[in-house]
Image (cartoon, rainbow, N blue to C red; front, side):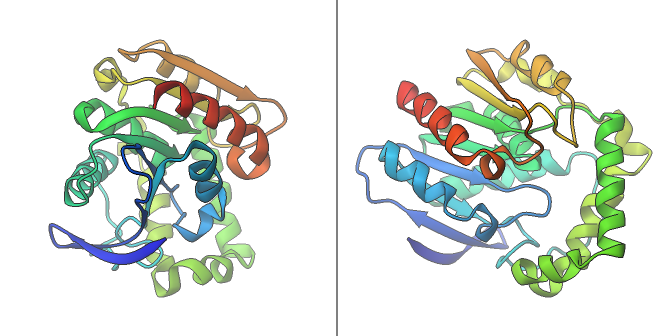
Amino acid sequence: MAEEVVDVKGKKLFVKFENSFEKRPTIVFLHDSLGSVQLWRDFPEKLAKVTQCNVLMYDRLGYGKSFPMATYERENNYMELEADVLNDLLSELNINDAFLFGHSDGGTIALITASKYPKKVKAVICEAGHIFVEDLTVKGVEEALNAYSTTNLPERLQKYHGDKVETIVKAWTEIWLSEKFRSWNIECLLKNITSPLLFIQGENDEYGTLDQVERTVSQVGGSSEKFIIPNIGHTPHKEALEIVLQKSVEFIEKYS
């Protein structure tokens, strides 16, 4: 899989791109709030191989091997802005048939991208995404911040993000724990999503209730289905890899 740094309107993003399946769609993987290309492990390659799709992974600005973000300070629309960056990246790489697979923040960015740029998106797999702020989410972020202060989490993250760790942790936790973000809500965008949607969530997700799923699948403009996995938390593709892989393959084959 080819690796390069792509300049997207001044943002230098680390990209891994496999484009060997002619006339087949591209599965685009969007990582979570502390994630990176590396942290997907081999899940993208497995999914691409079975479905015979091309695959694109990238580190958002500030993450992984991408260049640092200018500041940890964020506004409420930071994920909407990331959807714009993704649209520019897809244009740069001439991808017009994307299957978006997003986890957590990446799932939300996938939903926003599908609503704003429908011509580029064939379908969406949203895994543990958010469309509004819940008390459970805030509690989960508080616990993660506590773990950052009291465990070896900084060292573990440094392996993937280098000296950018403190910035991305502040960027994530400070916005989600701020009073101004409690009103954040993207439900008004859902009706504009006309591409098929699969929403995957662990029943015991520590960052969101099943309301996130129900309210999303009931409001999108296109076809939608939910896939709730019992006894699983916030990262189904790691906690129940084979189950998520099988369901994702079925969904992609149905719409590709």
